[in-house]
Structure formats: C-alpha cells, structure tokens
Length: 483
Image 1 (cartoon, rainbow, N blue to C red):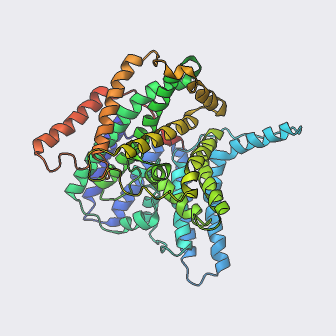
Image 2 (cartoon, rainbow, N blue to C red):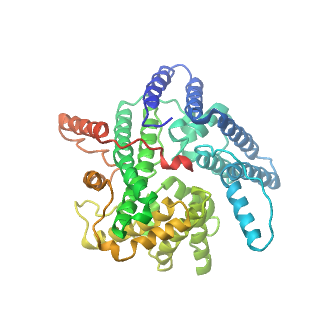
Image 3 (cartoon, rainbow, N blue to C red):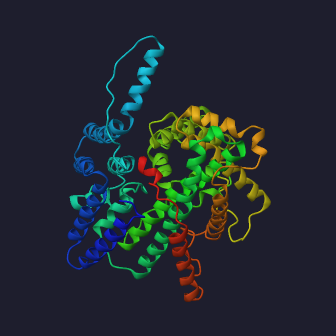
C-alpha cells in the first residue's frame, strides 16, 4: 500500500478514528489496533511475508527477555545475542544476498577453471526487510549492552517492530526512543496532528511532484544513455539526484507526519543534505537513522576515529562498504559506498570531518561565496556518486561516466522530453528555494507563514495541494522499497 494511493487515503482515516476512539478504554487495545493495522498495511504487498515479521518479532522478544535476566552468565548472554544476530542477518542474507553470493562464487571458481553448480533461489525480496530486521536487531544489542531493559509486553513490542508508518522504509527507530511511547497513554494533541498533516503535505509534494517527475526524465536518459551527449547524461544524473532525495525524504516526511497523527514522535531522517558543505556533513544529514545505526553498532565498536591512521582508514572504508551493501546485492552499491569512502577520507585524515556542524548560513538569507562554492562541490560529487547507485551494473555506470566526460558535455542537452523537462527544472528551482528558507527547521514548511495571517497560510497550503493535483508525475514506487 503506497502512501500516495487511494487505498491509503481510505485506510488512514479509518485507523485514525478507531485508534482515538480507544484512547480512554485500553492502551493494550490501542496497541493491538496498531499491530492489526500494520499487518494489514504490510499484507497488501504480500501477506505471505507477514510470517517473517512475526517470526522476527517473537525471536527478539524472547531473546530480550533472556538477556534481561540478571543472573544469566556472560557466556549465555553472548550466545543469546549471537542467536539474535544470526537469525536477523540470516533472514536478510537468505532473501537478499543468497543469489548474489552464489553468482559471484560460481564466477570465481569458473575463472579458476573449476566449474561448480549451485541452485539459485527464485524468491521475491520482502519489502522493508532491511529496515525492520535492523530495528529488531538493535533492540537485542541495546539490551545486551544494558542500555535498555526488555519489555514484557508482547503487544507493545509487536507494535514497535511493525508500526506501519515506518515499517517498510524507515526511519529505523531505536527501542530506547520508540518503544517507551507504546507503553505510555497517548492523548490527542491538535497542534501535533496539524503539524503532522503539514509534514505529510510536504512529503507528498516531494514524492509526487518532484521525485515522480524527475523519475520520468532520469529513467529515459539512464535507460538510453548510449544515445545521448555528455550534457544530456549530466542532466539525467541531476534529475536522479533530486528524484532519490524527493522520493526517500518525501517518504520519511509522510511517515513522521502520519506517526504524529497517532501521538508518536519519530526521529528526523533527513536534514537538508544537499545544502552540505562537505561529504562528512552530507552523511550527518542523509538517511540519519541508518548512518547513526552503523555509527553506533559498527563504527564505534571497531574503534571509530580513535587509534592509528590505518585503523581510521579501515573503519571508514568498512562502514561505507557495508552501507553500500545494505542497499542491495549488486556491485554498483558496493562501488557507490567505496566512492563515498574516498570522498570522506581526506576530511578524516586532515581532521576536518567535523568542521561543518552548524546549519549553513544560519540566521542569514544567503550563504557566503565560500559556503556556496563548498555546497556546489559537495552536491556535484554526490551527483556523480549517485550514477553508480542508479546504473544497472558497473559496466553501465562506467560507460555513463565516460559519456559525460568528453567534449559533448559542452553541447546543449537534447532528448525527446526536453521542453517538458524545462518546466520541471522551474519546479525544482521553487523546491530548492523553499527548502533553503526552511533549512533551520525539521522540514521545509514547518513554520512557513505560521506567524503570519491565517488566510495567507491556508492559501499557501492549498497552492501545494493544487500543484500536487495538477503537476504530479506518473506514479512510481518508492525507491527504498527495494531495500
């Protein structure tokens, strides 16, 4: 069930009304409704994979109870943690990476002159599996490290794992933040709900107007890249850069906004990353829930930025390679992670990876020339890296890059939909301006016209609704559903 579908437009109000009708009756019933609604929501893709979510939920619930026993010996605690890691990563590995490893192992042996036979699995990748497995896994790790205590409420834990707004594409929530919210009585907050609707509106604009329109042109250019000039290929990469941002951050905005309607607070997942002044700042602002997950559960345990220069370099490359591999079983994602590690490395070695912590041009309308140049360079590097992310394979990515960097890059872009694309570039200009003006908030229109005339504010909201209705592109699946 897509957020931008008629089905969801019917589903959400029904669940919302039933949910708040139960607020004075029973917290357990309210949580049970969340679980039922979440399972129904997920089952609209493929009900058969509900068994995986239920299995993962029960496994980590029972392991959490075991890890919480004060008399349990250290060896048994480690065994329980290892079981949680093995089960969660085993499920992920089987469905997402089995065929990838089999194919590459077969290729290696074939190269060495040894032919081996392996049976690939003809299975569908369960939507959102990378998100909810990481969420349940972090629960077990946090209990093992005694950061949190296990819950005995199976219904609350099931709701935490399956919470439908963020189930299939995040944010990847930590138990310490989200789980206690299922244990507390929720009261309807009008201002929180209105804020949620406002964030949903902006998320829908990002997805339907920005991402879906950019997808039309990015797909045309990438799918026929051998036919186009360097300038056209560069324009295709530009469109995909905004497609993936509008698509994924739009989903996160809708998820966070929907959660607010039910009285929940989800973590911010994007913080205007394309206004970053270096790659370190970009990764503090892009897919924050995943970046911080890898930081806390992999990077810091490996030593982080402590230790020798070799250890620092090793940790950076490892964290980016694993991050790339998390996105998919394809060498393009691994190379995408490698490219970002190379981008990040000079900042780490020069100890400049934390020089841009504050928001760019804070308190000012315009950036300084130095800030503007830094943002332009960072954006350009990011755009080139996205080519690996979008390409079908490494050969396609390399030929695409080769097609950009030749004399034809100076020509005028030319493809069949160029005239229509001009209007989308105008919409992108509007989008960037609104994002820039709202960059000090949690999302761009959080406070726009909030202290001005109420009529003016509602005119602006209706103008966004109008643009969504009139300028929405052809419906596309959310990109991160495939991960």
